Image (cartoon, rainbow over all chains, first blue to last red; front, side):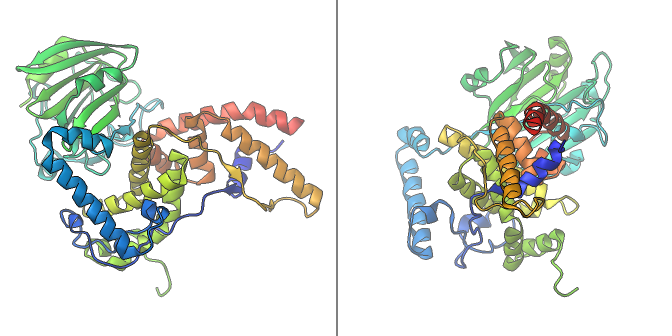
Length: 276
Length: 187
C-alpha cells in the first residue's frame, strides 16, 4: 500500500502552476511615497502585475498612467468631501479587511516562551515596544508586570502597531490549559465599528454594553470567536480572539483595548479600570 | 566564497543600506514561492500576481524593522498571504482553487513502459482530484505543506495561524483523504 504522504509529496512535482510572473521590475525612478519609511530607496520601479495584464505598452507609460490615476483619485477624494466615503468605496479604499486568525494551539502546553505559539508578533520589552509606537501603551496595575510582551507592526500588524501583554497565572483567574496564559491585554490604535463588530462575534457569544472609565465598551461572554475593529488608517481588521473566552473590549481614548481571559465581567472591569 | 549565494541576512542588510541589487536578488529568490502561495490563497493567477507584487513592496518598506535574527521567508509569506486574503475580500469572492496535473507529466518513479506511465499518471490524477474535492482549509494546508513544500512555521505564517493549528488541520485533512486514497489503491 503506497503511503499517502509520500504520494502527496510526489504529486507536488506534478502539479501545474500558473507561470510565475516576473516580479522583478525594470529600472526607473523611485516613487516618492516609498521614502516615508524604511530604507532610503526602492530598488526599482515595480512593474508587471495588473498593469501588465491590462496591456499597457511601455513601462514608463504604465507608471505615468498609474501616477495620473492616483493623482486623480486623490484629487477627487480631497475635493468632494461629502462623497469621500462613496468614492473610497468604489475604489475599495479604507475598506481593506485583514483577517488574522490566532486560535489557540491545540497542543497540550506550548513549548518556548509564554505566548510564543499564539502568533502575537515579536517578543519584546515594554520599553522597546513603546519606542516603536507613536501612542502610549497602558499597563493594568492590578495584574502587575506582564510576563511577556509582543509587538506586531505593519505590514503584518495593524496600522499604528499592536502590542499584547501576556500574563501567566494570576490569582482567581484560570490559566488556559492550552496556552499556559491566564490573561491577554491587547492594544492597538483605532476604533470599534459596532455594526461590523456585531456580525463577526459568532453564534455562541453574548454581548453586553459596558462603560469603562467613562468610555464605551463591550463585554463578550460565551465563546466569542472573531473581533473586528477599524485601525489607525481606517482599514477594517478582523482578528480571531486568541483565548476564545470572555473578553472585555473598550475604546481608551483612541486605543482599542482587549482583555481576554477566563474571568468574570467584574474581574475584567477591575483590570480595565487599573490601566494607567 | 565566490559564486556562493549570499545569505538572506546579508542581502537584507545590504538592501536596508540602499543596495538595490540586493533586494532584487531577494525578489528573484522568493518570487516563485510568493506567487504560488498567493495563488493557493486566492485561486486566481492575476490576484496572486498583484498580491505577491504588493507584498514585496510592503516588505521592502518594512525591511528596516525586520529582526536580523528572524527567518525572512516566513515573514515574507505572512505578508504575501495577508495581501492575498485582502484581494479575496476585495473581490468579494474566492475562486475555487483547482489544481491540475501538468501536461506531459511523466512520473519519475514509474517503469519506462507506456502502460506503467499511464497508470502512475492516472493514480496521481485521481489523488489530485481528491485533494481538489477537499474543503478550502484542508486543500490549502495540503497544498502549502506538500505541493509548495513549506515548513510548518512557513505554513503557519502563510495561513496566519499558530503552528499547532497547522498540525491539527493537516492531521484532519489527511484523515479525510486516507479512506478514499486506500479505496482507490485497493481497487
